[in-house]
Image (cartoon, each protein chain N blue to C red):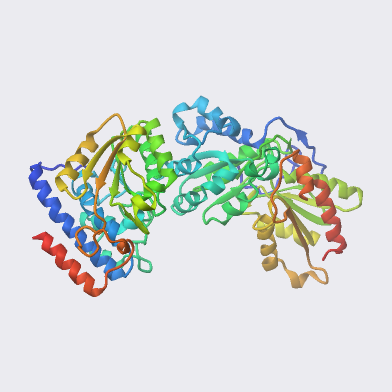
Amino acid sequence: MSVGNMKRTGGTEMINPKEKIQLRKTDSPTRKSFSERMVEYGQIDKEFVVFESDIGYSTYSYLFGDKYPDRYFNMGIAELGTMAAAAGMAADGRTVIVSGYGVFLTMRAVEVVRSFICYPHLNVKILSSHGGLTAAIDGVTHQATEDIAYMSTLPDMKVLAPCDTYSARAAFDIAVKTPGPVFTRLMRDPLWDIYTEKDTFVLGGSHVVREGKDITLVSYGDIVFQALEAAEVLAKEGIDAEVIDMYSVKPFDKDTLLESARRTKAVLVAENHQKRNGLGYEIGTFLLKNYPWEKMGQKPLKFDHLGLEDTFGESGNYFKVIDKYGISGRAIAEAARRLLKGSDR
Amino acid sequence: MGTMVHTEPSLDERVAFLKKQAQQVRLHIVKMIHKAQSGHPGGSLSAADIMTALYFDILNVDPKNPKWPDRDRFVLSKGHACPVWYVCLALKGFFPVEELDTLRQFESRLQGHPVSTKTPGVDATTGSLGIGFAQAIGMALEGKWLKKSYKVYALLGDGEMQEGVVWEAAASANKYKLDNLVAIIDNNNLQNDGFTDRIMPIEPLDKKFEAFGWTTRRIDGHNMEQVLSTLREAKVHRGTPFCIIAQTVKGKGVSFMENVRGWHGKPPSDQELAQAIKEIEGGLK
């Protein structure tokens, strides 16, 4: 595991975008992988502490508490007070991890994150589980489908959204090594692994996890797998899709995006989040301003964006729910076909 | 540098000095808010005696080294009362007294509400009620964790007690036995819209804090002898967090502001300033 400067990886031992990605089933949700790395890191760096609001057995922060009881503060079911106390303990520069569910940390405590963590530039790192509809089974109150919008809007905040065990572990390292506040969106349930410990991750980086020439599918977190599935479906129809894992949501990898968009001339962002103020809005605005429109001839760039359409989710099986709300592999493939045909534009 | 070695004056001498100093503080408060034509005089004046005692007797701070790691921490949880804090910091030597004239002005270090990254001596950014107190919990935890002997003092408004997060913080101070934490409640019974006991009653504060495992004292927040002796007791207290409920009068020291709702966040006119100065200077003699 390392956090290097490479933005893209290749080579035989690392993820190879020229080859079909093997999705490897995992038992470890990203919330657990992140917490496990936190425990390991506790040995390397003995100065950081962890604040929890009584869901340590769910975020797996209890693993840290078991090993380092004097560095673990369970502040009770009180996310606002927990976040503010974390700010207080971070006031002189200490790194404080705050662990909890996305809905509570990014919404109940958002003002503290804004005014008392981001504004004074404190080293508070938010371990935020149950991102998007990955908490499908728990229902809307536990589904953080606006967390990226809230967090990425805050000045000084950095936002990470790893998709698998290895990127989640790397996200912890990035979070603690990056000065100031960092938010990491994690998932409730285990899905797949695509990376290995040889892959490197960096703030502002991305991975092209599949190369293609016809369309660029951009995603982060769990929807990366859906984009890869869509790419497989599209390949059978002769559509060659590139898939970018934009694990660093803020800042995002503008160079890789722009380079890919120039080649494919079609960008489709899919995210497990409200469409409004998600990464797709950010990328759309970025491309409007930075894409070399005049140089690209008659059909310069097609763009579309999938996410929650100004609606809440619901309880149920994760795969059924993401399909209903239009961010499954099937839905992404369908949107890609539509986009390339140009019939809905 | 930093430890204050006094040749101990008698309590009476200290009290006499602090009483005079508090009137100086009040004078600067009304002048700076008048100059800015913006700010919160009522809650600044009610806290003037407490703040004076803190800065000129209790707190172990070093104006030459504001970030001195062993300093006592002070958090103004009722952040809108920052004029009284800025005055104390200036008179203590953290920045020039003339700078008080820049309160709330463009590019001033003296922001409308306290900002830790801008003003020397300000340990915590505050202004959203209840949150400063909750931050003080973390600062006290940090002190405990580092096995430092400094204390964390937080000044709260009584209206602020209506914020739920105050009670989250109060509970956690008990759990972690934060006997390095002192909360002082400026109990002036007046908030923006009216009397606290009518807007949303928060009493009995002493019983509530005792139920949360705190040691409490109820004092007259304008009786300097009581203020000083209770703060000195809090300073050496061990075993539990310590809460001082200081009965005060909002606008104290300026007759037409005293206990009048409208003076929460309103600057005095030229005429009102002249009257206020006259009254405060009268109190100085």
